[in-house]
Amino acid sequence: MMLSKKKDLKKKIKINKTFNENFSLLGPKTIYGVTKLASEMFIQEFSYAFNIKFIINRCAVISGPLQFGKQDQGFVSLWIWRHLIKNKLSYIGYGGHGNQIRDVLHIYDLCDLINLQIKKFNIINNELFTIGGSKKNSVSLKQLSEICQKISGEKIIISKIIKTSNYDIPYFVTNNSKVMKKYNWKPKRNVYKIVLDTYNWIKLNKSKIKKFF
Image (cartoon, rainbow, N blue to C red; front, side):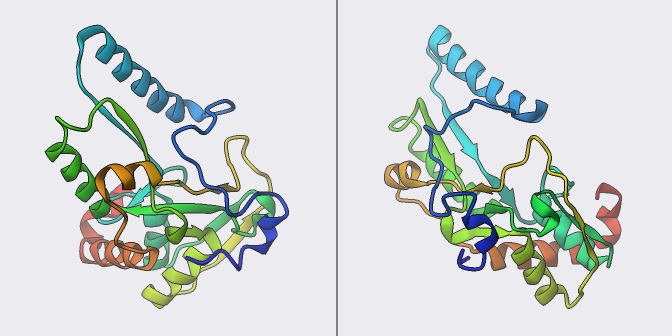
């Protein structure tokens, strides 16, 4: 997705910045985030203690079929579900305009990468990779709403909650340079394809999965 429409955030952030394996881990993380970081540290410690080979994939936003979205996790599938059932949503924080930006990775693209990593595990191991949709698959909440409206044919009420959580950040887009170089891999499916595939799966299984949203 192009970033040209995200003018409200340009004054606050470096819009072309991306985050790789070396970005700072200081600051608030949420309990969920701390458990993920702790798992990386345990893996590395076990490797040191017992000579176990490993690969750590530090993934950004993953979405696609079989995901049950919540407010703080899986927001893409949550957005699709609320449009499908015609239920309201909220833009939370940063003035409530929906300008927060994330990059999204299709679950099938991640599976393609993991398949490559398994095949080459004896050659490439003991590595940490940052993985995401990168700049081409970055999207704001507002743009995500527009895509959901186009695919579902529904326009829902989206309210504004101005207060920003201490854990939220306005912009996060991953840098895939390292993993692309090691495996000659890059995401094949764009944001529209991610939303379309997820929408079709949710619609097909609506009656079975509604209790999980």
